[in-house]
Length: 166
Image (cartoon, rainbow, N blue to C red):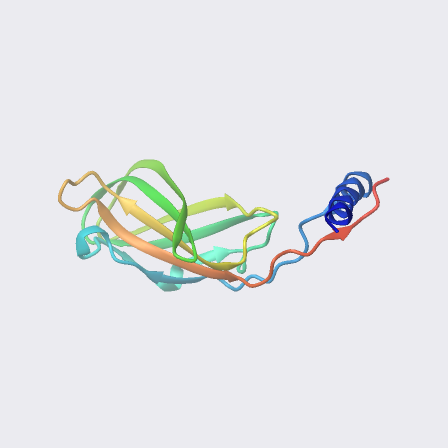
């Protein structure tokens, strides 16, 4: 039984290398929905996000292509946007956190927009995904200007199919 299983695994690997097994398959991904999350320390956000101007492109995400999260809103007063932080959660567990320098002014009362672009891998683990985008300044009292939450669900794991290579 163990020998048979081992043989099947090696055969599957051999076929994959010889005939081009593709682990990608088609996944069912929900549309991305946006909401606001609490800023650090429970402070009032200093950046009023316009959720009607916040979107994902494409929506839903497509594996093997770039995806963009776009946010826009209005600062309550002039701010220096130091950076923004991206956090990715799967089923409530943080998997990734990245901080990107912005170092740019945002004029109070005017629209301030930003994008986050990421390559969507060809395999995405199934489950409930949550992305947090946090704009930050260098104010020691309140560093976070806002927190935007983007959520989506991957319903199905990829299937394995084989294609012939020429």
